[in-house]
Length: 157
Image (tube, rainbow, N blue to C red; front, side, top):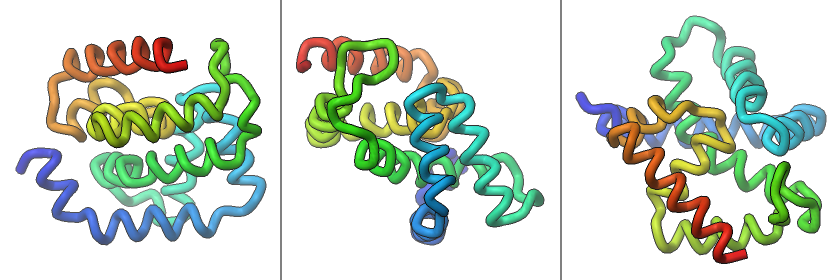
């Protein structure tokens, strides 16, 4: 079974689970997610994986954790962008979170797969290889799309 097929077969339960887990977060955990998203996607992924293990136990294979990250990534994006001061600049850029929010909404409509790549890479800390596997793409296609998206972000802002 291809990765995308496997994910879609469990989409209802995992999507519901991801939403319930994020809805149950304490304020300190939400703040931690926002801090790590603005700082480093590696620490963000570690926080999300800890959240997964704490809520569901450590006996789940890597595939289930990746599936959880697949569904939680867009929720984390909304959480981070919605709770960050909109005039604050994205780390290492001249782009504000308000600009980023508008651009991601535009990208969701124009190219939802690319927007999903951004969610996975930058809001869940998923690697290029894992992103490609989750979306049933080749890794070089993910890299190319992310470069294209970054170029558009620089033009649109």
